[in-house]
Image (tube, rainbow, N blue to C red; front, side):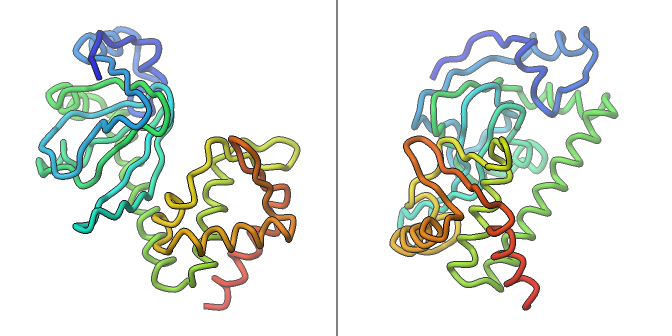
Length: 235
C-alpha cells in the first residue's frame, strides 16, 4: 500500500468532515494522504501502536479481532463515509482490532495532530464524533444482549437482519451485495460454519432469503424481522 496526496472532494464524503466549509476542508486535506488498499490488505493491525484516523472513501473494509488460537471474529463492516482509528487516537492505547480490505478500497489517512486540532476547534466535528462513539456503544450493547440471550439460530437471524437493513432496498426487496462467507458470518455470531449453512438453507426454503452470485436478497423483510422480534419479546 502506498500513500498519495488526499483529494478534498472525496474526503468530504466522510462523516467526520461532512459539512466543513471549503477553506477548512482544504486545509485539513492538505495535511492528509490517500491510501489505496487492495483486496485482503491489512490496513490496521490489532495491537499495533498507530494514532492515525482513517476515512473510508471507496470500497468495503472489515473489522475483526483475533483470538490466541488464530480464530477470526469479525463484527463490523466499513464503507464510504465511515471512519475508524479514533479510539487509539483518543486514549493512546494500541489498536483493539484489525481492519482488512474486503475488496479494493481507498482511505484518507489523517495524522493525529490534525484530528486533535479539529476536535479542539470545530464544534460540528466534536458533535459528529460524539454521535459516532455513541453509535458504537449502542451497537456493542446490542451485541452483548444478543450473545447473552439468543440462541445460535436467533443470532443468525439478527445478523442477517442487520445486514439487510444496511443493504440496498428496491421495491421492498433488501439486497446485500458482497455478502460475507459462511465462515465470516459464523465469526460474527460465535458459531460454526455448518450452523450458518443449515440455517440460511432453512430460510431459503421458507422464502425469506435468496442467495445468488455476488449478492443475497431478502424478499420478505417483515418475516425476517418477525423472527427476531418474536424471540426478543419472549425474553
